[in-house]
Image 1 (cartoon, rainbow, N blue to C red):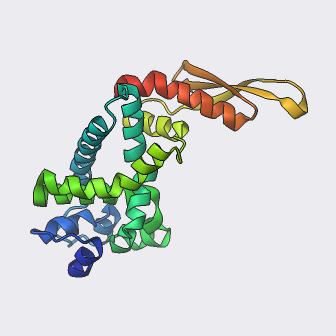
Image 2 (cartoon, rainbow, N blue to C red):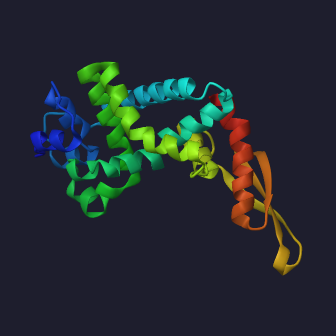
Image 3 (cartoon, helix red, strand yellow):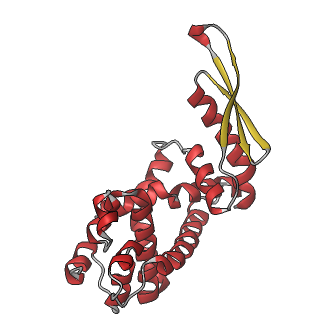
Length: 232
């Protein structure tokens, strides 16, 4: 069982209802191997945490970047709440160390899986919100996203549109993007690649570049502008 006192000290959070913190740390695999455990997994808390996170981040971006269009705000929000970012935050908080999970999940690296880390962070946010309200959870979220905001403002981060498009498609139950090289032109020392992004049966965008990767990134950015912005 998790030492909740130690966990709260490590996270610098004091819960009124410690059961909410406990639930935020329960991976579904733990219940499969401990059927007498009386509390549910963190999936319901993850659901509400995801909603709270999206609202808080959107509000912060809206107030911090009054000159930016809806499209750019949507892109920045997607970066700040994507699995990669959330997993990095969760890893910095060492949330993986506190998770309750089944042995099978544990021995296969479950404590360092990005999906588990990201989901546990969303569950923790949901737990903080239910325990202490919007004002407290805002302070927690702002503290966690501040380094990532600074990366954006300083130009130190290049948004990974390919990852954003992939995650967006999954969340919206859309077809997973497929990248297809349709043309390679030029001599060996100066090739130009042309790549299509296909979702379902539709070609969403076309990108070009001096490498397949560069062409895919351009195509994914164009696809994100076309699809992601419209669902902002």
